Image 1 (cartoon, rainbow, N blue to C red):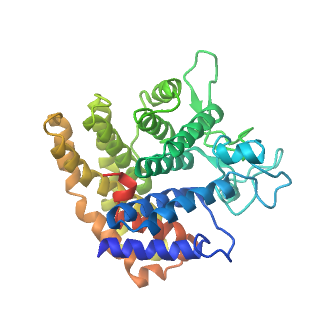
Image 2: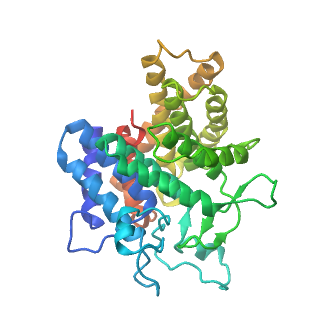
Length: 380
């Protein structure tokens, strides 16, 4: 039932955003499309129906064609990397990818407006890492190394532009938002979990038949992560911590890494946020005052934790789970009913009739589909 509900949500998304309705202009948004690619891949692996694989690959191509190029309302044209048409097709991520926001990016010299900036285009690092993950999953599923190569080219481009050093010997830092062409920062501050996303995603790419060397990028990201406090009260951020812990566990159970302290650190950092979410009474708050996609991001993280147990069990012959890590996992298990409760709430027509659902419908429904059937996204 859950898988069928997820497939129905994804089918509607494909039509609504112009993926399967060629008479409509494609509506591409990098974060949402990253989850969508994984969802289609998961349905393909689960059912064997090649239409889902075709949708995933078509979406990858469409994202590159739309978000890898300048906007229609921009005086600039072509690939944002500056490559010519032929080279751009073969290296579509070498200049990064646009977010897909509705407004043009802030022009040089234009005053900064914090509220307006949320609706302006540009590039977000944490969106780029989500697309790297989607491309890696596509490569794994299709056994085509081209997609992993594109992911690693994107990692190189993002790292080169978002990472900077305040002084020659200083610890690297990261900008939160860059211009479409990656030539200038649009928001100078560093995203709370951006360094963590960088480190885990680079490791994921490097440990899987890497076509490029990311050792320098991994080192930089690890340096930024040193001493960071990852705790957050943002449900989407808590879900991200749990997902990153899951990816590290995948690497650990495969023998690719041996540092279990980082996994335990991330899981422990997620606990206060989960406790806060329950304690503050969000579950009793009307839908009009809630953002579904942020809560569904938390659900996806909880689903990832559920999968960690099966990873450990299936690797018992080569992997012994440290006792501290197991105790933390046991604490997290008490929150498993929370995911189903949130999914059921956002599946209700009355909740979807709330004022915040329709403006965010694409991201809401795609992430709801991911939570209902996380197999494609998690890769386990």
